Image 1: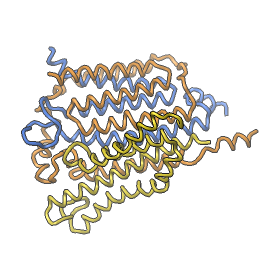
Image 2: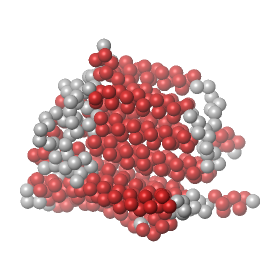
Image 3: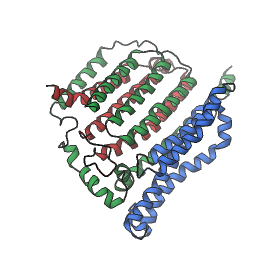
Image 4: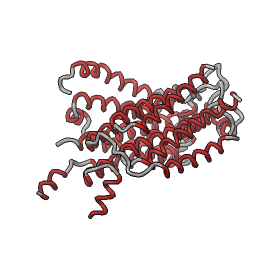
Length: 139
Length: 119
Length: 185
């Protein structure tokens, strides 16, 4: 799709907006509709759009596949690590109330951190899957 | 009568979708079509859960001033995660289809079976 | 009232799309219709007050699933489904019997939208009344997802992670088909 000018211009305008929206959905998920799962999917769709329009090789230069593998593991680690942290601070596993001075603040920190973990993993895994499918067709 | 039909319409359409997906899966031999059928079945289950969680005149379960009736948040939580897990498992199935095509040169079930028999 | 009209119309559209998917043989058309099917169900989720779910379904069903199905189509180079050699009577019988049993099961289910249904009276009121005070998060769905059902979500994230690894193992590397063909020749 190297010569498709309209697609290239429109996606150049759209992709930053999609990423911004993904970040909004991620960090505003506790007040409005949204959360890690949705944000991860929206985030990855921005990069999928990029690689559909500008080519897989260009997209892999922006996010190299080894980085994606690290990110996918990092998200799960962040989630499970929050559980371990609450365990070490004297609470139950994944009981966020002990993470800060008041239970409510602790809950809030816990929810934001694990949603971030979910978002990172989902975005990275969706991109890993897409790159695997798209890369298989390369000769 | 109308009341009864409207009260069950969602469930009946859901069952119709479920059976359509089921029929595609068991009667068609093309693997991509089978996966589309499985996905129809999957979406029908999502619709079933969300229909059950709906409360008449309710609103989305985000606590705000001025609203007292909310829909049931629990099905939303279950289905939200199920959708993303669903796409991950679907992609796994599609990856298997790609490998089958590379190994057998076809994605029709009958032809794969014949090739296995003739080995 | 408007909710009911939208609900009935969207469900009818979804059913028609499903029939079209069943009858068509062109795989590209099937995949495009599947995207429409997902988008319609995302619209229906909004009508049914499930904003979070609609979000996800729109991004996943109409976006990523469609792209992945198209990628598979490009990799398998198939365009048309072959006409099945078996007669459809046995599958049709199985489907009709199962469907009839399920419809029989819905006859005494609590009507759609009823606030006194068993599904509405068990833990949901607890989440709605105390969720805000216990987690400090106005969006109860996020509160339940991340806090009350944190273990559940941890499991789901692990499943997604595992699926990603499995896809990488299956088709992560480059294809070796050309080499093996050359060796055969």
